[in-house]
Amino acid sequence: MTTKPNVLVVNDFHPETLEKLDFFYETHHLWRLDDAEKPELLAALEGHCEIAASASWMCDPRIYELDSLKLIAAFGVGVDGIDFAATGRKQIKVTNTPDVLNDGVADLALTLILSTMRNLVNADHFSRSGAWTAGPFPFGSSMAGKTLGIAGLGRIGEAIVQRALPFKVNIAYHNRRPKKLPYSYYPTLEALAEASDILLCMLPGGEETDNVINAAVLEKLGPEGVFVNVGRGNAVDDSALVHALEAGKIRAAGLDVYKNEPSIPEAYTALNNVILLPHVGSATAETRREMGNLVMQNIASYLCDNTLITEVGEG
Image 1 (spheres, helix red, strand yellow):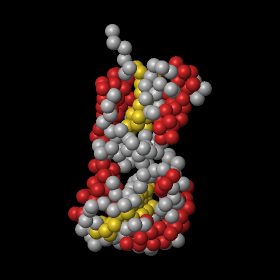
Image 2 (cartoon, one colour):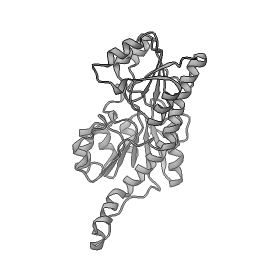
Image 3 (tube, one colour):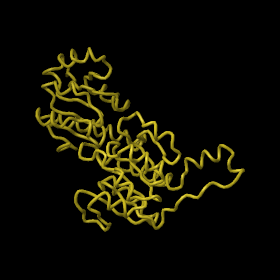
Image 4 (cartoon, rainbow, N blue to C red):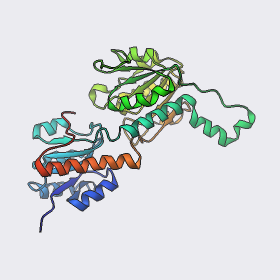
């Protein structure tokens, strides 16, 4: 009888994928244990477990104590939850799930842009409250002729562009360096914001992007500007954004990501010119299933011939 390979399941990232892992492998669910019990499991797995499966945005640091660990198969694209200093030191390979969620996140980004521009959440409340009988709802803004500035134009950003172009918008972007694309490039976030009517943040997580959407950037966006974030919450200076929304320094914002999820700063919830979503960019059944399939494929490929489909080079 063949013994199934051991897999350490770090957290509860996707029930359907966890069921598949349970079926194909001998799984050990770290997240189901109390903190006091976790060292005992890791000690028992030492020398017998090379693979961990985890969410990409959070990972229990205890797993790096497992000397036999060789692979972290991460569910998600942004890998800011992985300690790359530890993986590099211990020669642990990391995979993620890129591309399969591009469409889902791009759909959500454009939906959030449109909803913010047209103030649709407040329009829904207006209709339900009966306020329409007292007069019309305030005007929103059209997309046509506006400039959509994208901070962090990667693969998901390019999928967003393809959805946005039929709305007759102009595209601008900021990256570390320009790409060979027919869109206006700006070398700084402030310059991009000044040129944009809508500033879309697609920046990855990590120290390099902490609070880069700050008061100076929002000031350049201006009182008619709209800010949308579907990248990572750490990129936004929350105090600066709250002040900009309260003081009318920008018109509105739409947020799907936050610094300390699932907590949302209370100051946002008191504002009626910001739409707040619970990090649902890739939250469709189809997208999450494809992400889970890629986790499974990376593990299977590693076990078959020590190759990986979507290895992450660095954090």
